[in-house]
Image (cartoon, rainbow, N blue to C red; front, side):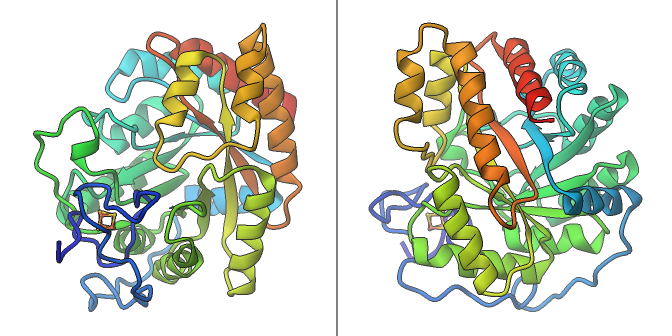
Length: 337
Ligand code: SF4
């Protein structure tokens, strides 16, 4: 394999396997052993100008700078309006904002701008996940413009998992841009720009340098993927700071309230829980209560880490459990407040 199946300019992605294998092909990742490419613009030449901040972006960054922002992943199915509205109404009194991100396997999703409009109509702020898998740069610019109109608080820019890994392997992947290039486009439209980092995914030595290039492209916020608890998060944030990053870090906190939810979380590429976390929940007689209490404890530890501006209550609901899971997220958020 000579080229990346996701056509990434600024790789590697977060889907590299434990032995260096590609997420989308039975061969090694093409970025292994290569230095992280320095940010040099879209396609290595086009450097978008930074846009005037939207009011929503300014408010988001100010809120993050105040600290203890409680974000919750939106658990509703990615293409259901009524479910989205119901979950938003449940979450709005418990958390500050919801992240409506790319689903781990559901490929048919409401457009990010429409999701933002629906959720914000219900009185809950939304940070919009936008992936580069399903749209070319023109369609992405349209979505980013739509998100300006809806007043989305931030845009989380991801490359996206390859279609081979989801429900629609028949779909043609686009990957006109990658997460780093998309971050630059989002910043050009004045959004508060978030990106993801996966500290526990190989090649681990590339994770801080890659994040710095995303920051050079325009990122201001970093979601730190599940990487084993507050210790690994603290080490990663410290390494990024030492390398010159001034990003606001928001680590993911795994929230598990059922066996189905635990299985879904474990299926996330590169998921790593704190040692014993899932095992302890597996032994609990009341998995829901134990899961809520464990998430509150872990979130408090994460919020103590220097450089951490908030936490993202993250996980997944089993089929039919979405609203109950939203109630659990709201309860955790309320306790943290
Ligand atoms: S693992 Fe990801 S970055 Fe590496 S070659 Fe495969 S798709 Fe590209």
